[in-house]
Image (cartoon, rainbow, N blue to C red):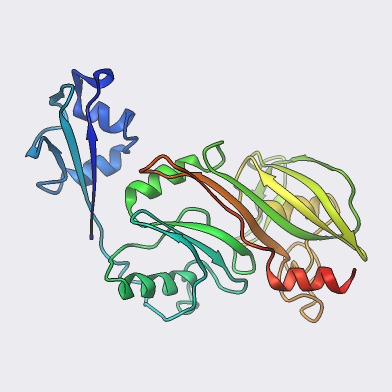
Amino acid sequence: MKRTLEYKITDEYSGCKVEYILKRRLRISGSLIRELKKHPDGILLNGGHIRTIDIADTGDVITVNMYDTQSENIKPQDIPLDIMYEDEDILIINKQPGIPTHPSPGHFDYTLANGVMYHYIQNGENHMFRAVNRLDSGTSGVMCIAKNSYAHARLGGDINTHELRRKYLAIAEGRLTGGGTIDEPIARVDFIKRAVRPDGQRAVTHYRAVESFGDYTLVELWLETGRTHQIRVHMSHIGHPLLGDWLYGTEDKALFPRQALHSSYLRLIHPVTGEELEFMPPLAADMEKFKNDLQ
């Protein structure tokens, strides 16, 4: 699958090396530039092959051709996808709870990646599976998938900046009021579990109580950092673990079958068009029902 990008040189970059323009103006990484060089038409200037050390002038056109192949180790499967937006570069999905994002040892089937591969093939497209914001199996809500290496690098670099913003809704145990910031380092305990520990990486979570019902509170959260299980670890640390969190709280599948966490908002700058895009899926049906049953 080929994706072509073009950029017409302005006075600001006249007299600059092509590599400088690729990195500074188009924000193409060094690793992607090396990959582009493997193809005769990977990097062109005015339609002809050039070296990245060559100079470009005002009015010249740089063309970048990226080639992609299907993720051969991911089996396509016909899994329903709730697609919120799609174009040549990104795919936005409202992920349902209970489905892992990636295949893992012993769990190669029925993941979001399997469903996305099937969707690509049905549309006559070949892409690798590239999740920008990965969600745990039990977490629902909006997530972004990049359809080429350029989009993935651009959006991945925007995570935890003002360029890409994420918010979550969670049902926490206990009644909370107001809001606050949890600034506590998170460290790995074992292959799966994390914990607040002085030797961990800095992790910052902001939260505010939205409404309480019974002995639970609907909480809105937004992150400055993106540590594994950050929200789940931080909420457990302050004594309000998420409803249904088997790892950091109390598991009771009869009460609620998963951690009650929903990716409720995603704002990004499109990596190619520069357009600001916002996505706000409704609260997951099981969380909405739990809340309504207690009101």
